Length: 309
Image (cartoon, rainbow, N blue to C red; front, side, top):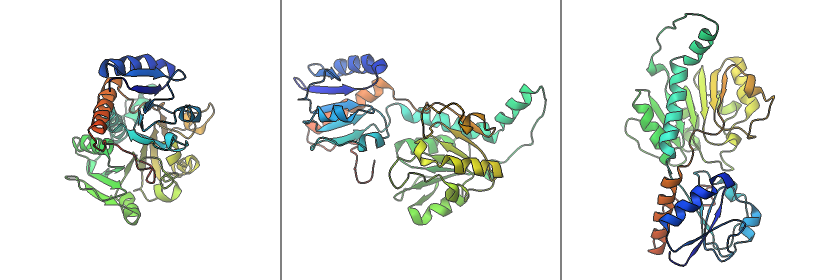
């Protein structure tokens, strides 16, 4: 990489950590932070860049996304030779597993109920519940999804998985494709959404799909807010078909004041923190991908624009 340039686009608060880490990992490479970035740069490392950034870098060949989701990038008009490479983990998998297991255990063990009882000064033990009655369905079985599945198995929950194409995972009942989607939902009481956001998955969490979950179903969305039809979720919570939801993502972020999710007793909101990129791990992964390209190899994580991931 000696003598080459990388254009960097990210929030100002993160810029120093990324720039310093990249310079240490790639000595001899010029790291230019937008808007000072050189128009000659062939590689870019970005998070939610603008169209102006893309227009200013017509020579880009590889665009490395700092996170796993590339939906924001695919909305832009990219330079003609540019290909997108996503981070497959970047320290996010273990965080995602923590978050999902916490959400599942919190609801299964009824810690949310105990919190309310404690606030009211009530000593009110709840009856035991069987894990076999609470199968967990995970939508999306990529690197992050499979790490979540593995973590859930450590707590002895029955785990189901659904993906676009067939997958085989030990001790997991796997479903695939549109033709098996309804069967997957019917086999799940918890539903964890970890799908990439594409035209096919937008609004996938709607009245029709969520109604097929087992009675008392519980939704955990750690993917994108646009997967969920929010009014449909509220209606199913109010009807009692769903018992609750933990949402790390919403259609509008930050969630606006006065939104029904803030005050709904069956909804728990967190501010898009389920899995945050670890800079050092992400840089190491990006460097290995750049080196693979230099060797003439296809880098792992290359995005297929037609699929959206």
